[in-house]
Length: 446
Image (cartoon, rainbow, N blue to C red; front, side):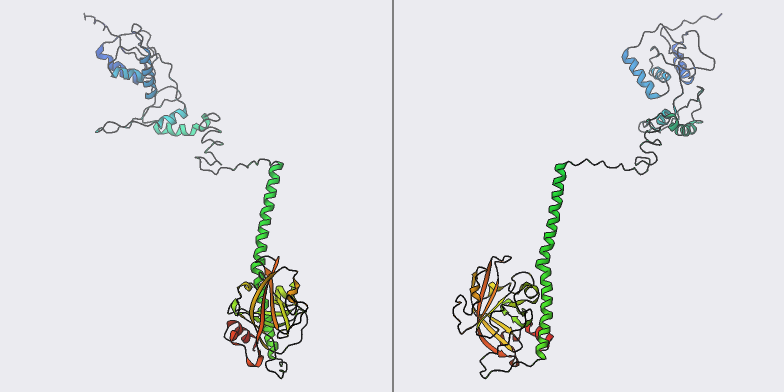
């Protein structure tokens, strides 16, 4: 008759899984030699009741031990059996097990994310081993580790949108769901284009509206002013210079086809032509001080249109004609419209001013200048500033606005006739080799 074995004095590890023989109804004790075997068997048999093989005589664990076991169970993902196996592997067979709840099937979404948990690398020198988790089916029976690995993953991914609730990851309205961020028509991780929301404009109050309107009007007025300045200072010069060239060419052609006036008995006596009709060109101005290519046409009258704005230099109707005794007075713009007298302030005593007509060339020599008010008309008298005297000199008076870009004063330049040359003798030396006379003579055939 065999001798009965004495039971060990330390409690054994409980079996936390379910086996094929059904749940255990009575507590039992095992020796220390079979403790590890019992632990491994209980971890594999996951269908056993949670209270099978529990030792009620063991002391209760501390809070720290309970937290450690809960953390181990959560990290292992296999329930309370993993914590029991860990305790058994460490040689703590006397620690009582935690009371576990009945095992349930893991949700599909949880299975999908459980597969994505990072796995720790093995120590140096050890080969990494792929551990395939076991997947439980809906009946609670454990499936083989390799058989249901891929199938469970695809099934979890397909069932995730349907199993997830509204607003949850993968569900309707949630991240990656049909109507959530990353879904169709969204610019998130799903790859669609995000629909732009209409921008709601804040209503503008009366003060801000008035300020905005005033600012827009100021900008518009500034642009108009800039365009006006460009037209006034640049475009008018282009048009006036073009008109001046055409008019000078026409004059020289007319002079070439007409016989000059009969010369007087005294060759030193200049020929004085009869006045022409108003707004009619009859001469050409050359001022070498203003440039080697400077020339402007001379017309009858001092009206802005068409004489001063288009024809160049205008003669005062009541003044003397070129070469006549008295005061030959002319006017011209200092800025804009070709600006024929733009450099009038640069004249120096001794500078020559040549006036060409069909009869010949009249050379005047500059003497002095004066600045007066616009109503000082006495400078146009036969003897400037002396209206009561008629005099015997042949004087040229140039008038222009002063200062630049203003008309509050007049700049006056006085010159006296010093040479007369008939047209047949050719131009004087002051302009004979100039670009201006060369251009006029070639264009008109003079």
